[in-house]
Image 1 (cartoon, rainbow, N blue to C red):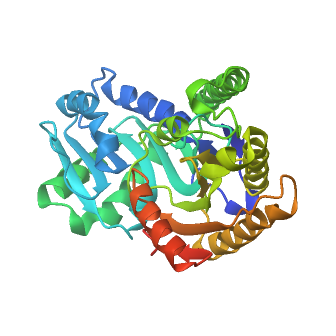
Image 2 (cartoon, helix red, strand yellow):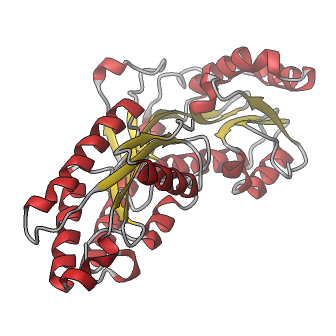
Length: 379
């Protein structure tokens, strides 16, 4: 996905417009800049600085950064949380706090005296609903450049922002590279590399969106294990795939766990058609409460989960109350079976999703007769 964002967001320092992009495009751009760093050139010293957000994201690229560290004079990564289990030789780190603005950045900057490239993106904590997984759909506001002047400006920003948290060796190595940059006439206004790269990334993004759309259409034709045949809702198998590789501490998710009481016994007491009618009515209500980026999942015989990215607790409570009341009111329609419901909500950045805690809270709320309960928000 690649599109111009709201012009009110402003321009990057170089004049390159900010764009709203999905994670796969950032991965492709990052790899291009990392290969830029690895390309042979008699242009030392070389500095590479990257913000990885979470250790698990760096672990997937550790081998690549081991190669980069062998050709760069300084390689620094920034991340939140604990130090990764292994850092390749030559790669040093800066730990960021949860509330640090840099914790929401995805970036990689490469600078040498005569060349440079940079990508900087800010996590919007939103999701593109057309993506095949939660992680693939994460949205960022970003810009990129293959101009040495832009890379210099970005490295100066990082040096200033992180300087107090870096070691004397890290600061000294970055200062050495910054101090060796030389003026090359005509290069600062040359946008040809950026224009060509943007075209290629746009085509790549469009192809990925088409591939995701075709895969979704195939799922609709032959749903398999990821679609409940009676309600038509997604299953736990879908939820596991959709949330796979999503890291703790990143995208906030609103969760609503709903229980329709005694649904498990409807078939025995009233027949298969009654059970099917109730299931389809509940599914219709859940779909009405979801947008393009949301997902409704049947997670148990009587339990249904709404996954609502970026919702705050106040909005979750309002939506859960309306949904609980609407489901409970189904007893006034065919097959005229009582459908009392209970819901528990929470907002979380935890992965895997805290379904066990939600389930336990739902049991307590059911016993206490509380229609909607808020589980302490997990940030």
